[in-house]
Image 1: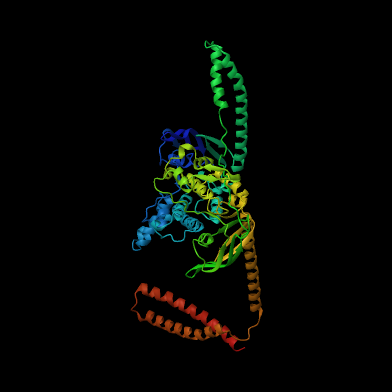
Image 2: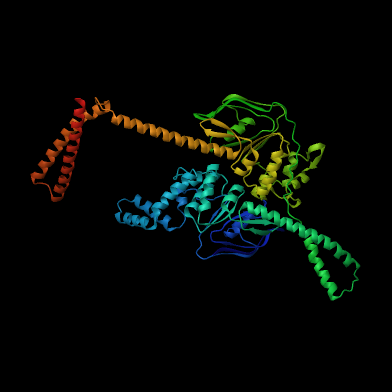
Length: 626
């Protein structure tokens, strides 16, 4: 069943054509990923589909009565709404029932409204919906539902927006970089949620494991058009290679034939017959085929690394805390040449603090960090580079250097270096603020590498970079001869690069795990398994101990039982007094019918309590006299 049809969609900015005549359909249950290089219009196309931007031509048609939710890269919430109010703002029968129930709780005297709200909760299944809200918010580590959205960080807003979509479960989810601002546990949980979701999904993401597990269809945007691959990411890579190989073969054959036809055309007189004209017209189409180019990932990272001496970075008994919060406790490590280290851990456990201390932006509370004289840091941090307002792309590069030194004494101009980083000439004089998010990140990475660092620190380098740039960056970093520290939620990136992993466990503890991200996850599973087995053993021991205590004959009362024995006498006397008073009131004749009923119910309760407590008193009395 077709849910979405896109027909002949074209979009341009000024003279720059982003895409042209895109046509595709999405069926119910499809899980589609859109992959493309940065700046080719992925996010723009999603906005057009959602009606937040307009196309130059073409149309977007949804099936009738389809609910569509869109997760943008940046959310714009009402700052005065609470998180829960924002989550419940979608108009569904469940959210309406929950909102009515909350209003009824605020007016407890209106019994009719409360009953109607309770009935509506029952009829719509909103009780289960409320449990679903709590579960999803907890998984995304959104703890205070009453917090105003205006006080949230960008990452928190993204998680609230994601929670809202998952809770509402629309017919179509359109997700732009859903894994950004999520830690590794959240990403794996989201992967499982979307895999089993009944919603149709259209997403843009750079997370290649995510693409592999969740998606069953890949749309590739390339050369202003779109190619469809009915399979996951591995299937896409295989078929893309086959397509390019076939295209290259077609181009080669066309070039060979073009040489023959070109010679024929040059020999022909100006006056042509019908057959000659047909052959000439065919030559035009042949020329178009022969002059095609197979699009390759042209990003070429070629920079000279400064020489690295024997002493690099040494951490001796390093500790860091803010007030009573300990982030790092007595950490020792000596970096060796060529090491590639990954860093993982929950937010707030001290990952960025350690990086800032290594480069000297922060000082340790105790211990010392020694940096070798030859070390040149290249620090790519999450906040990115603060470019000047109105600054052009080429000017930002020339500010650092007009010429960039390469290996073997060669140099490259700033404009040549830009082209190596996929910034074509028509982008050199663009304002930086007009670049896409991925293009800005690529420019920032370029400014880091052109300083020829020999100790690279990359804090979330994969956010907003497309999978093609990531592939080339990975190849460069594998061959990089200096030291590398990577903090990333990109599991594929970490698996491919790092040799061992610093796991920030919290409370100042850092565990050094030999191996990559997969080794870290294996370690966590083994720890979890060991903890469960340990808890089972402890529970078994507790059960055995209880059984032994129950079987052991008691010779005297415990301290707790003595206290209970002494209090029982007082409680029995009080209950007997209450029984007497109740009887007197019932026979006095002054009580109403309702009052008599209430007194008789209480009298029965008191008599039962007296019987139970007297029985317990006798039991303890016998133990006391043993």
